[in-house]
Length: 327
Image (cartoon, rainbow, N blue to C red; front, side, top):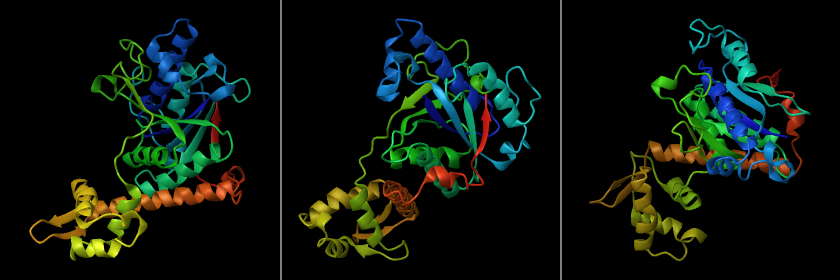
């Protein structure tokens, strides 16, 4: 079995097809004998113990998050190399994929799952992407290997894909395809690109995001802070929190340096240095909202582990999921 690539899709056909073509060309190098070190490293960790060496990284399915108009063939694609007057996006994507997506799984073939989202509603995108991720990779089961292409579609879709990857840990690779002007009409990897993942200036993958945010502690503090029209002194805030386990062994100065200065540096709080007054701002409120998304994902995972939800069966009831093309 191969990988499932989650992608956003707007009107640019190449956002999907160039990614598939890149993976295919990289697999060609693996199959050719004595592959470059960058290619071997690229597929390291992919496939698990059941995959033969040459099967690692092979694409089994695409899971495309896009608008109703695209799924229903009511939106024309942007012009692309070799086609200045393309038809509907979905038809064009399928047409090009038949050329660039060569490998197929002996059992499963090549599948494209179309998932309808509100492309400018982050919450809708995030909720659906998380559900689909758990649908294909449920806790406690082997599931599918998920990669995320963050190149195509709306900003809300891209950020939701990245948030899913970061908050659930279900995507083992997240990547971008170069969007330089000279590449924007391409539907295959440009001939001038010498395939070297993360070194060719065209394909960039990153397995995780590094962060120094102490999420639990920051959450506790921000929940206690008033909005900008009200304020609280650092001393009063510390007095409220010092009895809690996270802050038991701190003094006021340590609390100020370890937490309050970091929160202000991240842009989550407003701080009047002269009066030592603090308040939460809009960016801080956004951070709290993101943690609520994490809590929702954790709740879903907990229910799956307890077998309270069968997402395979549940997915059959989702009106926005289930349209499938096979190549």
